[in-house]
Image 1 (cartoon, rainbow over the protein chains, first blue to last red):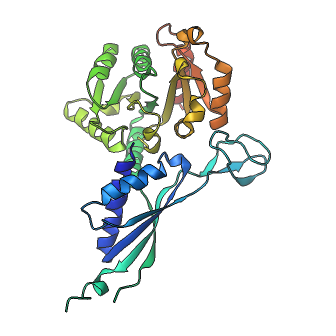
Image 2: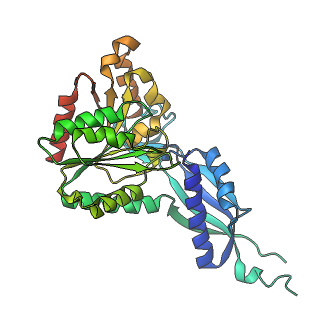
Image 3: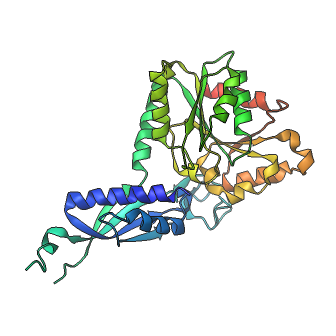
Length: 124
Length: 225
């Protein structure tokens, strides 16, 4: 279970972005591949814990699971794997270990609100 | 009045920090001419016995050393030190895997203790026994071995495809026990090829020495390339 330390890295990176851009973060969007070694459910659970006591408390983690894409040397084309237990071209059956996608563990976008514009509201 | 949320596009690798350290380590090892091999497996697959044998057999010809990760105790370092090679334990506390920064720190500590890592031919890094978490972390190694013993079941690669995908070579250990557990080598080989086509494997026994020479020959050849 290394998802907690991964979640803490995500929070830390998002926090840095929030400070640098002077924004408040509502949500962190990320792409997660099955070969990243990270379990989405465990990461979502850990994210909530990692956010506690930070400026990201209450924010959401939006995970987009991306499929494993391989290069098939026989078809000379990019193919989507149907099973992690079978690294073969889904069309011609040729074995391949050339992974093009599926290892992603990437923050892709932040849902933010402008901090400076938001701050004065209700201060009267 | 509320401010409308907007979407800011960023693209940041979450493990960038680890990858940066790992890349620096790899460059450092390459500049020094040290070939680095890491070992991953489930707990009890025989990493330490296999590594002790590896160190003992390589030591007369090569300058070798090992780092060994565990949650607690110095037991593995004590066992590996019987090979007479320099060994350092990395205790991770509660962490289930090694990270590149821990390897870097251990090397720095070694340096302050007066050991010069730059003089090594081979450095071995034994990861914490775990087939899940270590797959996410690059340690700057040149070669990652995934070990599995004949007693663990032939379908292990199918259950843990991610770690097999992050590794370069499979080592089937405890071959001396194969008969006792009706081990089916052909099935295991087929399962390894299913999750990692083209993956090379060695079948070894640290106890009887079976298969070790072939594996050592492979390591020697990698060092000279």
